Image (cartoon, rainbow, N blue to C red; front, top):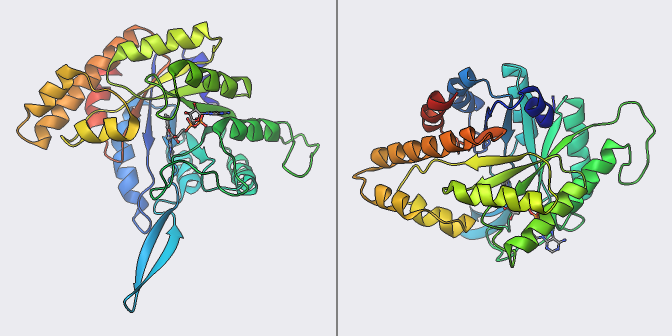
Length: 317
Ligand code: FAD
């Protein structure tokens, strides 16, 4: 079922969902299940599975370093299919511009359609580790908006090189990313909103936000988006801080602010167990306020470990 239909059917009740990352290549999928199992009692209507970009690795061949391009966490669509099958829950594969040609994207979407996957998250992806700025893959998309256009066209039977008249068209519900504190490359929040509106006008059905730690940023963003003519559901993305290093890492990587009260509480912690508890408590307060404000879904970034998400969900759902 589409994410937007889950939201409609909930009749204003806030839903619970989360995002997982595929295991590192060669690891057992049981580890992943081990982190999903404890969260299923909260009845997520959908689970997102991220896609990781390819990266360069260096292989030592008799003293000479061989540079190879590889994906360390492949398997997004396969994992979506296996979770859907095992738990009877909808899954949302993240589809990226970076690292994929338009043709590869088309084949991936065809796979998703055959697997009965109804939702996809359309994203540009970040620059590769060795690049300063995002560079589109040869034959791939430059911005998420053109990926949304490709998916939307496919939904109408328009493939890249042919129009196919069929009664078996895909009907993907399309999610896109939104940034309450603006995307790091956008010159202003208004410009970024303009780009978000383009994605929605191109066919995006809902938005999931980047993590934020101050709810007022989300509320202001939702209001600004509405004033700008964006009327699709905007799902808040929540990440509990889990280690002290997050205080430097999250602002550096995602260009987001951490409120001073949270910084102080984390800095006062003696160890990472205490930090994890601070992160959980903060996320519970954030989630309670968001739920009271009637957000459609509370979407949690699990980053592969679910004990903290479970502790939060227990207080909310
Ligand atoms: P876009 O919407 O294309 O925007 C990128 C930048 O370009 C923005 O600054 C925008 O303002 C600007 N822009 C857009 N259109 C135009 C235009 N026509 N002309 C000029 N400028 C333009 N990354 C992964 O690698 N894998 C994942 O699974 C993943 N999942 C994510 C899930 C969520 C909920 C979020 C919020 C992010 C996720 N990301 C993921 C990160 C995401 O790929 C990066 O934030 C990326 O830098 C931007 O992606 P986007 O889809 O927002 O890009």
